Amino acid sequence: MPRYWLFKSEPTAYSFDDLVSDGVAEWDGVRNFQARNLLRDEIKEGDGVLFYHSSAKPMAVIGTAVVVRDGYPDATAADPNSLHPDLKHTAENPIWYMVDISARERFSQPVTLATVKDTPTLAGMMLVRRGARLSVQPVTEEEWGIIREMGGPEPLN
Image (cartoon, rainbow, N blue to C red; front, side, top):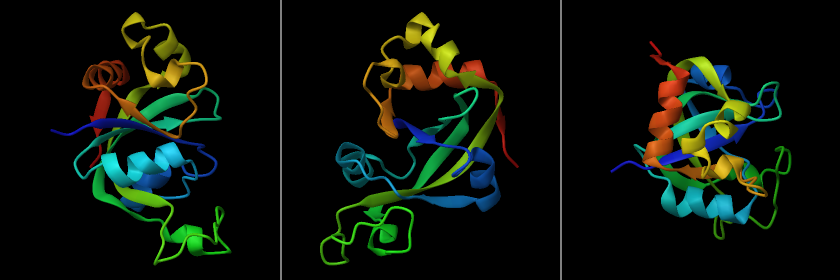
């Protein structure tokens, strides 16, 4: 059974359009241990992803993606010229992990954070909990279905 996740990205750093253009992308640069554990241990090929634009006006779920590669060491951590280096991370002792994702659907109507907060059936969603700021978050199957329905998904060609 696939599981479901919400991945946050600032559109100025990496947008849903970037993912569509790239086809498949490494979800790298995550430097939070709780999110790292999800990427390393929980998120698997075939899982669904809600792609969320954070630090945007408005902040919103823009579309969906699918995980196409299970977690593996994030090579950007070992690169001192990357945006998120951690020189304690080595091939022999990887600390940080990433997955690969591919865009699946664009929402005809982005589902804004305000809309999520105003939807009683989404009141328990991690996205709206105080202090829950993880860039990678679990989503229930029910939350996945509600947000997809609200967004009016359109398959990408």
